[in-house]
Amino acid sequence: MRGTEAEFSWSAAALAGFGVLRREPGLLLVWSLVGLVFGLADQMLDVRAEGLRAAGYSGTWIAPITGLVRAVLATVAMAIFSAAVYRTVLRPQGETRSRMRFGADEIRLTLVWLAQWALLLPLSILAVIPSFLLSTLMPKHEALTSGLVGTISALSILVAWLFVLVRLSLAAPMALAEGRWSVRAALGMSRGHFWKILAVHLPLLLGAALAFSASNTLYGLVLGAVRADVSPAVLLHNRSLADVFSPVRLGFTIVTAALGAVAAAVLYAPAAAIYRDLGSHRSDDQAAVFD
Image 1: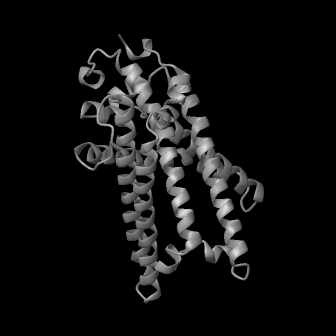
Image 2: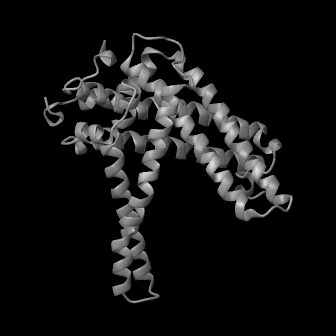
């Protein structure tokens, strides 16, 4: 049967992550601890870069290298968390521990995520070309021109990102379930389901963004109450390990790690649920995924 003839349940996909947390609440603690480790590592890298700049080293190479290392670290974290969530959804009868490890599956998923990021960069450049051409036809040095071009560019990039991320949203669960991934197969499975897949993910993404925004706002208010004599911009920046492990900052990191664990289940599980439903109708169905 062709992928366009297959269907999936919108409600089952959207609620898949909440189902994971309800069935196996113990996962939340383990995943939060792993997220805390990654969060502290990221902050310590930032502190290290700040220390090198303070010591007089050239900032021209510190920022790019530190940014690259932090980006790779974040991508590895994505791979580890997404693999754990995919295993929970696709293999619910499997091991009941954290389902979290770093092996061949996680390396494969890291490459999948990196490939998607690499694809988004040239697409973002292509997306802003129309607004750039439009700017050459409009009056120069006017606020209206700058605002209009900026808005069109931002919307163009957003549309390009949404299109790619939705159409390739099944590539990652496919990589874990089948031990391989194919852009053609991922596009084929999502063909005809773009708006429905987007309708699954968009409310969850907005909800996660609001939750993290509320957490950041609360953190800023607490910092302001504790150190009213210091600028929030200074307090939000880690300048030393003492800042990273200060009670308020460490508490915020722990809360963020817990929110991240919940977000991982809520945001990654829908793609696995959709893949499970649509993949069961593929002619090259991988039976081992569903046994």
